[in-house]
Image (cartoon, rainbow, N blue to C red; front, side):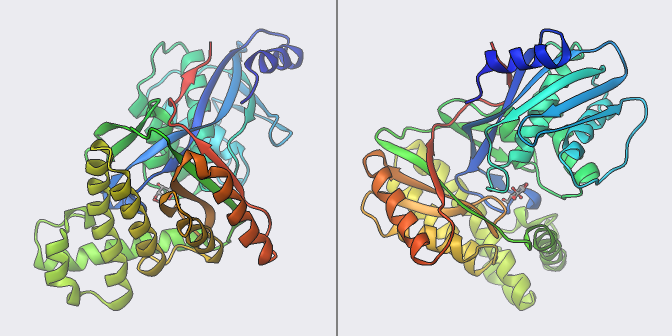
Length: 386
Ligand code: GLA
């Protein structure tokens, strides 16, 4: 955790003014992967690791921003849009500011100091944590007392699309904006309605394993998967007139019309259709406190992502397989976009240390970097710190 008092003191020393502090969390997705851009269902929770932004209005039209995490400073003028896709963290900051203005939310010139505990490249959405922490800071410093969470999330997504160049879905920004302590969030990515799903975990924990690998493929393959899904829904719409996206294809429809799809596209479609069904089934299981069933669905999700959607990698598979073989592990899967990043497992709290050491040993035996394993409670979304 970042020490809020220390961050305020650093801000004062840097900019010579008192600051307010805001924060937003990273996330882990329990189930519902690569379904958001198909207007389907996802079930993420916000994690304990957060990005913090200290800020104060500076009476000009400029935003001056320093990141303690990367040790760099930038500034930009709100009245003169800067270049897009610079390929640095400033794209997220300036993109969010522009997207807020585009949505009619007041933004004033500010000084900002950022510090983050959300690991980057770990598949726990450090980018949405940055967008939402900056978004809530700029909105509240601009005079909006209680910023609309949906607008904040959409502004973060627009920053990704327009400034960063990643055509992501809405999951990451939504959970960073709307996470609740002790609950996962079922998001209907068509209606954008959310349902809080309290996690009755008792002596069970959500264990995250950051494999510390990130394969270069991730963004090109992500966009390719999106295109393959669109192709599948266009083909199926010819036989099923109600189909607007893969969200509208039921498992029964898929069984009936799968042969109309070319091989790879068929596999992609099977993943999305079955993953939507698994996500809703996992909500039922978690609501009933049936962790064995929830874990089983998570493990099935991994197999589907590995074999049908082909977004896993060797390191993720090893982390999942090694953890799954341990007693006290209910289920395990890759989480996030894939091609590296993290896995998420449901494990008895008593076996966290053992599971962590066997996964680390398996990585060491292959000559890979040591992964980082940490448990997290479900936490609150973007907020002003006391
Ligand atoms: C990334 C994207 C999300 C979602 C996941 C896969 O995290 O940002 O919108 O598509 O991949 O489920």
